[in-house]
Length: 332
Image 1 (cartoon, rainbow, N blue to C red):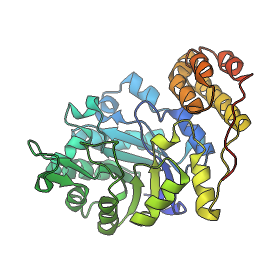
Image 2: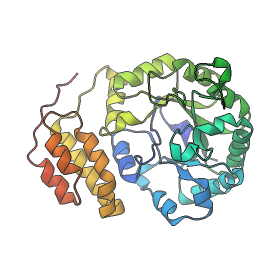
Image 3: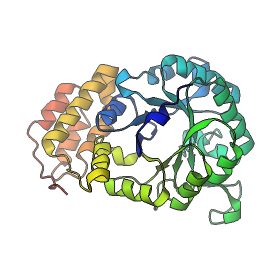
């Protein structure tokens, strides 16, 4: 097995998996914007095994995205074994197991982060995936989750990331991406840097720190505080797929230059072109949330945002952008 992770320069900047966000068009934008590795939206191992047409549409990607890692979720170890083989045949560079997602549609069936409450099953799933996979296996986890019936603030009632790392010892997992927040507080407050640091010390492979990276300064602070091998960028990339380039510039020189409107407008049009090429008119509908994110916070953008989120064609997008001239901040 060729482990692509070992050939990536550090710190590794990864586009973290996000449901409904990290489709092929956005992944291509982030790759062009400096991301070293891309994760797909999560897909069901059951759907892969049963050859769901909709799922296999989601699994399409461009060669320009490589290395691209497919994230999967489910509860059946046998389905992970089979799915890993399918994903390798489709050309993915790696397969990632979702032990971190707090989304209701996943956790209500006992998947995602709730699997951390069943560490015996975690071990079975990881082992089955590794045994079936000719490509590197990685996992995505959270800092902690409360055991059933335990209070959120009860330290004795937590299953931690470190507990999970302990249970997979000896299995050939290449990379761990750890979100530094708990299941109970999935997006609130600062990431738990101690949890990430502990995983970095305990896990022999690559560790990516995830959570709260919205600026280059955030990325540097998280790397400095945890000693992680890289960061997983999630919500900070919304409307800013070039954030990875900014992080690289800041880590190398201590400064970065924010995009001006012309560059932002060019990115929006490029994203629209890729989305349409990948999915036709449906791609532009999926793009609407991204269009709103691109102009979020810009002065006098309310009217523009309203036009963009109603766009049905590439021409609609281009027409809405044509005469808008916001005032953007100067270089830092």
